[in-house]
Image 1 (cartoon, rainbow, N blue to C red):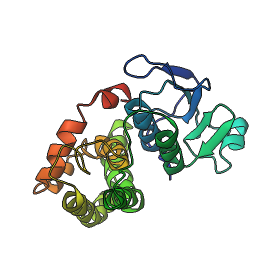
Image 2 (image 1 turned 90 degrees about the vertical axis):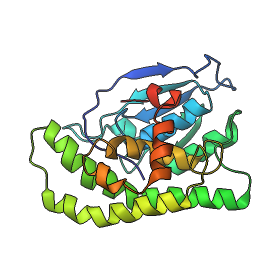
Image 3 (image 1 turned 90 degrees about the horizontal axis):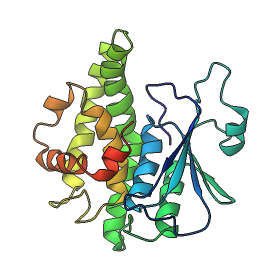
Length: 236
């Protein structure tokens, strides 16, 4: 699944070094194709930042008036973002990219080794993909925040209809999260990487305030994770 939300990105290349300035641990350069504003591109960028991998972000405008660039369709036949290259190895689909990054590059492990912890992390990713992304980002954030930014009236019926599902998403994320620094235990996992870009959007909407009442664990997690260096380096 991929996120194409609220902006129009020009085509340009941006270079990023790992937070410590270290080189990528292979001779092959990592290239990430997408747009900085995309939730799903940011998920991949967070993985690269947390693993301290140097990469190029090559911005692609999938909303161009002339359509998705032909060269990008060669990378992603469905015309979505992100797409990923590591040397001569090519991938699309965020889940595949993030897990590849975790498996190939050294550093912190983003997938728990304990089977139950890994299953919980994947369950949270599934909830975010299947339910939270559409509800929190498109139905609430885009309608409330992006519409106002672009001078459009929000679709109040869409927002109202989204609130019950949003409440269930937040309740379940709270229930499934541990009483520790991150969603699953004491280390960053793919669950955090998926949740953070969605919350970065959702928390800008006024609807987030009442919906987050009673979600103390989730609020505490967001306050801490939002302050991470990887988040500041990937802010659109």
